[in-house]
Length: 195
Image (tube, rainbow, N blue to C red; front, side, top):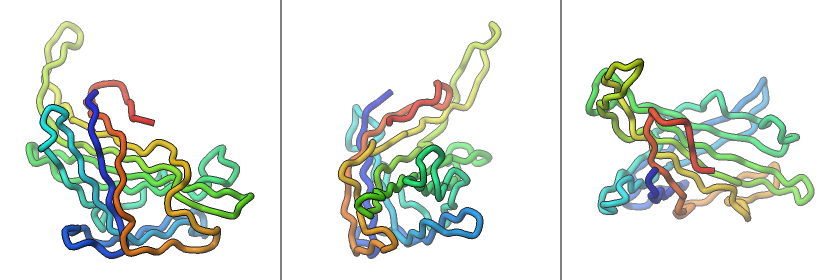
């Protein structure tokens, strides 16, 4: 595990050095839409703790899709949580027959007492690169493809970000940036993401 910083920058109108295109995503269950998002999203990863000059800039593509894990009513939340999970894949530059999977998750909460709604957590997973490694299985050494995966999160935020009254929308031209905790994992280690 390696510590690093992931920065999310998103907004309605891109800044001059912000080249991400705006996408539109909707979470629907049955015939009810609960989350509609239009945004340009970008994050900056510094995956090499030893060399902080190594950075990876990632635009959330307009072609990202709403994942099946997205929900208008997160299980066991009693109707107080909704989630939007955006997912996409990019070609692996080192292995053209493989892809690298990426995702970004927004967890929304509602406070039924105050009538406010906001983002309570953001997290993501970014397969950064792949390489061959040897592993021993059943007394045999085999070569496997191992991916470096960057897991990042805000953890639960208090106060919530982008809070608005229920049944209202949130609109701004620049949401700014925020730092997130991140860890570097290998695809062949037990699943583990920062929480």
